[in-house]
Image 1 (tube, rainbow, N blue to C red):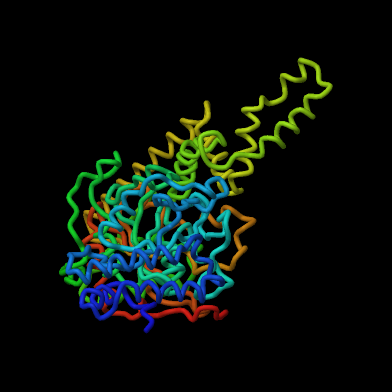
Image 2 (spheres, helix red, strand yellow):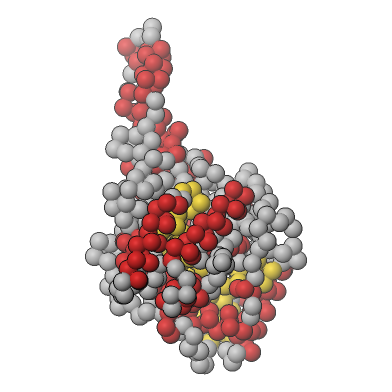
Length: 512
């Protein structure tokens, strides 16, 4: 019996009732990975023996009548940006290709405490910098709905693993849309929680004031199940919010009364694909049919979101990635070749000329970083370093921080009028591999509708809401007030209950 493709909620029900075993569930997903991941490329590392060993331990405990955690032996795919003790955590980069952390990230520790099973580590854009998972230093991930297309990014592997029924649940990270955009492109549900809702301890940092860990799954209730397992205050993370966490899973099916949905007219301008716009309008119409009132709200500073984000995020990346120098840990260049090259350069040079040649240490830093980082990571480090440099800090970084505050104020004002803001996740559906490779700006613009949530620190969710004529998924984005995940998930469940988009599954390997 194959269980691949079942919802996590259904799997938990069957596991608790002892109708199936965790071992059977994990074997089913491992078989799905073996059959299809050579085409999709969602996973970077899968240790089948270890997965079965974890599952057997859960089954043995269940057989002894021991109380199990909420995940009850469910397999969970994990973006390879989260530290897993003793297992490779590469960030899809040559820089950390052999890095094995000595500890678990808090989110991973909580997964294990809830008796979740780490199924494998999924692919991403290197250090989470990208929107297509083409920037991975370890391989490309493809969209299960059309293998010619990208799955989105940077959590492309996490989204593709769920869409391809290779995992019932997955963990991704969202810095500027990196959960919601791939969820939209792959036709699954993805949630970016409020900043500070989920501990970032053990998450390899891209932009520390923006990064947030969140779940992806086929359904809203499955997302709620995984969020309950990982959310809550963590003293190991100084940015973890001390706010009490209200579990969401058991209450997710409770309807909301008197719902007010905000519609942002500015979202429907040039650049938005008409098929996406139509699908989003129809989704908002579903909410109206459920009794919701639609109210126009304005976010006048949202048009500066991309520019603001692409100053702040690279600045923070420049700082965070400075630690990768070829000395402390990570990739180190071939020193023998480096020293031989240096000796050759120095031969026959005067003392004055020697002053212009890098020292061995500086050369070690430069070569290690040049060889260890990919092109997109280097681009963002350079952008951030420039914006933080003397004479430019006030003009770029400080100004971006001020605009960030204005964006948050706009959202705060909007939420005084409405409960949620609904709109598109991305301007279009998944594009073909290589379509934006020579035009970084066009790649950055796919974050147009998502970055504001990260800049403001509010929660956002992508829900499947339709398909293009070419058969590619379209997502609806819902944004909520800070720490309002419970009501956000309930609003998502209301829409899901009235539609069937979340039940669609791709035919793996089919090129439409």
